[in-house]
Image (tube, rainbow, N blue to C red):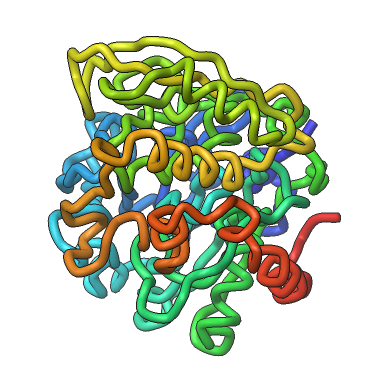
Length: 393
């Protein structure tokens, strides 16, 4: 069975002594051990003085929906202030220096899902930067990547397109654990001599391992990430946030169910089936979202059924989906025009893609192989970049 960094702290074999230290903890609802004990209790049981809590997007308790401001609040059981790192402004994403002044170190325990869009890793990076500025030590409690650590997919982030869904140039599917990403970004941001970083590596995880083989419980890390299968499709499914197509929020299978009132699910499933995409099948359906896009309206669409996770390529699959949606329903399909993740001057789809390549390719009705032509070169380059910072075989 895999043991997370938090589990190693709980078991007392991490080599790290926290007794008597004034600790801050950046965590969320999925920051649990194998027996579902939460990180706040594990840290307190070490004899540490848990002095401050920090919460990412969705909050420490994981109840807030996407892109909704989270207010700082008092922890109802511990009486500690939980400082929100996802407020109403871009500046709110980074902890204030005064929040770190009376701490000896900050512990970070966040379950990522293996996709560049998922904001928790960027909250981690901003905390590391803040601790570098404040002269505070950082300990990252490593967690496995639930969609594996071998496969990489997609390009990095072009200059001028960094945002909270991509603060550093890594592929859409990055194949790294939280601890590995902490090591890589600290080095590439020039912080190696600015911040004392310790990573308590997970044990027993292998790069080809998916979540189902880890023996770890699955706790929703965010409200619309109900299962490990959701995480597997998310590197592609999240692209729909940049469109007027429902990504299935308001259903029980977000990112696996997609569509809109003007979509004919049978036509869409037929076109996708003809695209010869590996490891996946498409089932036409109708659904009525209970909230979010098209709430209360009947939508036509498809459900994505992954039949072989070893060969399934989520980004490639959903790029093909976007191209077909644009081609079949050019009068109805639209890119999102509202601000996205605190950015007002760039389309959401460009922020998600890390550049304009996807939007332009879809608008020009380019074939999938043309749109994805440069991925393999960038994937190989990132694979070389990351090797020095990997912790797992």
